[in-house]
Image (tube, rainbow, N blue to C red; front, side, top):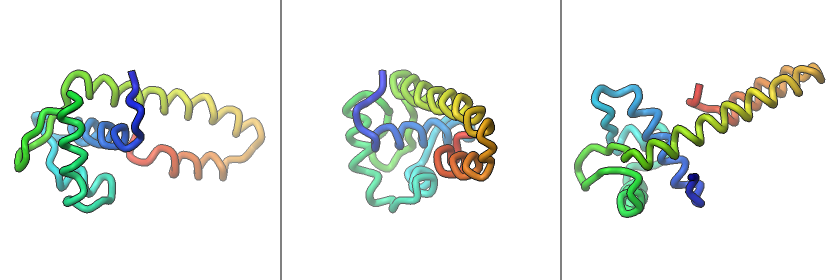
Length: 113
């Protein structure tokens, strides 16, 4: 179910999380740029790839929407991450390393709360 490209996954997660905040579920290039901390110019090439692989619906100079295929992948990745985080936290707490838990939560789960 997952794609074999970490960049694709980053974009799909970003588009999914942004779309959940936006009325109508549409996402702009600038929103993705801000979310991923990358330049808007670098987004177009990836959007073409995501479109050609059936993950998003998009045409240049228009908003972006995940296809059901893209949405399923993004939801699956986010759920896997949440399960990983939930299973790791009790182990770290057992060793009383709360500082490490905070670092992991900040580094591994940005914007996926």
